[in-house]
Image (cartoon, rainbow, N blue to C red; front, side, top):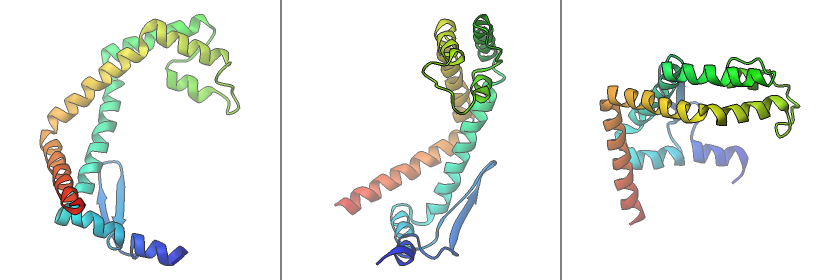
Length: 168
């Protein structure tokens, strides 16, 4: 079996899909085929709900990242970083701005702006602050959505139990 026949067997009829939507993103999965059969064996009638929960958790990750931009400690760390790179002649407000401004053929190992970025991240503790504050934002989202997290974990446990039964 080759090509289209194999894909149809594995992924099912491309015209038949299970769909779910989050706040920012939609996804679809095959409604039939080997992949769908395997997921159904692990999740039974909760397959679509599992997809919905994945999308909601993705939304939560994005929400937490957006909240970070308003976090006073993160804003202060970004300002320290910006002042530091300015000492090296780099006029970037954020590390993302610096990266976006680099030409596509930049040698990242030797570029002075990249070297200033790395040095200033180390000197200012930028990454330590950024990741610590992101963790707080993520935990706040998880705490505010404890019901979704519990449901997600219950589905993961259901999958684990079903997988152990399949594996014998």
